[in-house]
Picture 1 (cartoon, rainbow over the protein chains, first blue to last red):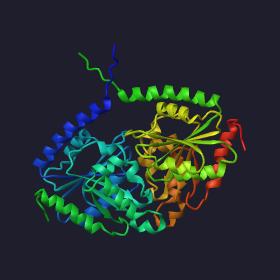
Picture 2: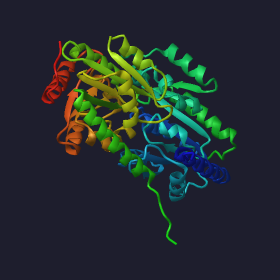
Picture 3: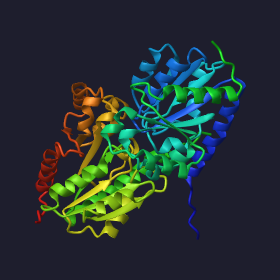
Picture 4: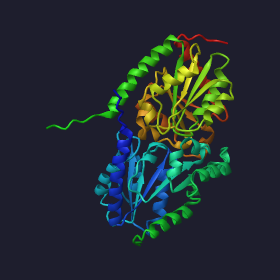
Length: 225
Length: 225
């Protein structure tokens, strides 16, 4: 008798895809542009969000969903910037999924807001597999993590629309090879936009913010003052 | 009729625990001391392994299992240090499990070697849940990741026997709060040993290597020259 194998993984991803598509329509209808922000722990997701708020909050309404396994450290930081924020604690799960975002976006009352930023769980692996109904996937790599990461965590690099290379202020103290890094990433994903920045010094933030603003405009979002 | 719910997650972890216990007995019988090394991508796992090889390979035989989603970049680095090494490619899976280690340790022919180092997939979340039959769990955090990580990724910090704090050479260029970090970690896990090091400059390596050597000796391993 043949052994039956159940691919639980594919099943989970399939169910998530359906829900994500549903979420995407909801966001579309209510005029919300969604950015899914992913990186390793400590690469600078929250710092980038705070910089985006500084840069764009006079032009577009912003809401933030914070995803963490535990704690609300990040949500507290974002709340101080006077932006609507909600914290998801995944209690062990290594990524956000569409179902979590459905609940959180309803709780946040995000309708009519221009930009919803979702800060995913700090993890360069699992979040790349789970769609959240987003318009753009943005990943951060930080310089101290090293230029060899694309080959080791390929899905994140091939799935993302933009790659923010953070902590450029530490470049001089590391052996990060910018040319090798850029050529490796572009060979894997020729469409990806690469933005070298320092969330600490502010270097490169305006260029990234302008790119994001253009994506929001392209979608025909109401730009509010 | 009541709905039946299948907790696939608990099931997977339970099956892994059984296999890990079996692995542990095998390693014990064949005289292998096993270190499971975990961290985020780019925190310095491979660099620490190269430093351990420098420091201990004259005293104890060393074998290395490299875990990555894709590529054999790390295995190539370790091979240059003249140590038996085998690469596991998880093809998407975000952690190693006991079954992978069973296969890899057999392929490596690790019997009679003193120290087996397992470099887990770069991920501060999932690897903490999967036992690999190891004697010690060692985690690395690197200074640029920030002092707030223990609250956000608690399981890794509570599960580990030792915490290597790497990239101390970058401390002066960051706002990493050493005192706050240490007190947070010790409040979560009073037994954990913290080792500030720089794999780049060599700072702190000897202290960590001595700790590891003592653990190996305690277990009554044959120390070979």
